[in-house]
Length: 428
Image: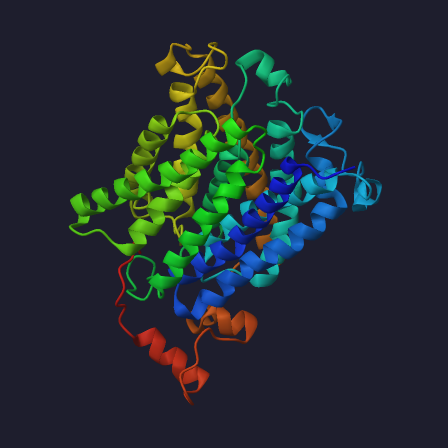
């Protein structure tokens, strides 16, 4: 069998999407304190390692094929992938794995500076198995919310082309739950050292995320026309979101920041994820503008409500994920002149379907993450000690530091770092 252009593109898209996880590590690593940056990068890398192995064993089997009550596929259908060695489906295995990897890695930003690396290593495989795989099956694999699924027959067809529910809302909701379980960092909201230590890392990470997102959104395109729409929308929404975020910062705080620009890009990428193949370019601009402005406000809610979402996973990924998913109820294009969102005269059906998907995703992610997180916290402990947090999780968890300054000892380095005033803009 000769390889097709579609298969080649999916392999390229998989490589682009895989790159997004180390890019996220750079983005998160720059946003946290210097003495925690390696730990943040390592949490993303470990997610890739663990989920990659799980995907070959039972993960891929759980997101497709005959399932259990429309909730998840048979974990043993392709266990070990030995029955797919001579099948082009292995390309789909690789592509789908990259989605699971980036989803669980996103969660780590909410527990920066204070999580045990060993507990994270336990959380990753359990969460991917019990939360990500069932949701992916329900939305994309033939389950309850897939085309023809039991719920779609009642509430209407859910639109989620690249993961507004499965990836963004599920990870954002899980991040919120873990932030509550682990509690606030010491000095949260008061210590000026709780600021990003490396803005160039953040900008580089955001740029690589934007680059990789063209594969993330476009890898499943089936026609040139669809691919073109996805590509343009993935360019336009983040651009507009950056503008929306910077304008909001200027109005609220008096100055636009580099961190705001990078965060705006990510907010726009999140918002366009579910709708990239189903809205017009003009709508993508409007969606990005709204998502950027709204998320610039959402990220400050952690101070109002008193939860420590360290790197704004909740504000950006849950916030923009909800906006992008629900917006389809208003701006989804009609298919062959039929249906579409409210703005196209499609009625309430699409909004009802999108809302149903959001509610189910939140229930699954919040409920299962709470069970997993509380179980790990009770048995292994999820949070490092006060002393380990003070010295920094890079040194306490990995016996390494991201930066060495000449002959300065590590202990002296950490004492100087802890006492030094912050010089970079930040949200916490």
